[in-house]
Length: 204
Image (cartoon, rainbow, N blue to C red; front, top):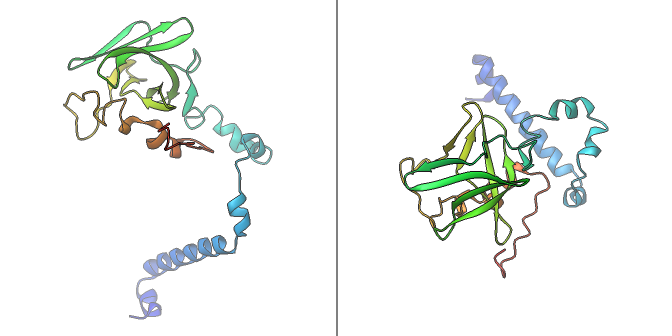
């Protein structure tokens, strides 16, 4: 059926099809007409450069969930209970405590041994907050034991295919494994101007 005939019989569907086609054409036209040099040379200029022209948007964004999506761990950013709080799941134990100004966790490491790790960053502020530890090689790992901001209690973020399983050290789903690695699983979508700087020779 010719487009014109279908358009007359089903005006709503015709308008939707026409709008989609025009949007696709406009996006393609913008991309192909944009100077290639500009696309390749575009660089992150920082929030201050944007605020000059977008003050209302910047004010609305400041302090929002997106603004606070990832922060350095401090008294102002950490919401969880680090007063020697303990959480157990199966036979895996996790303890959250303070060492002076530092926020610490005693958790099962990649070799199955329990060690003290410093919390480097917070991840999110509501409805849960997760915590990140830095392992050798510049790897940031996201703990599976997380803080429920509403219930004010620790809980375990289990992977969808292992809801009732004990995840052993060495498993990619363990908090020290690939599935919980911020560098490869989280950073690209949650960080502006992200650069991996991964070096294959040193695996770091």
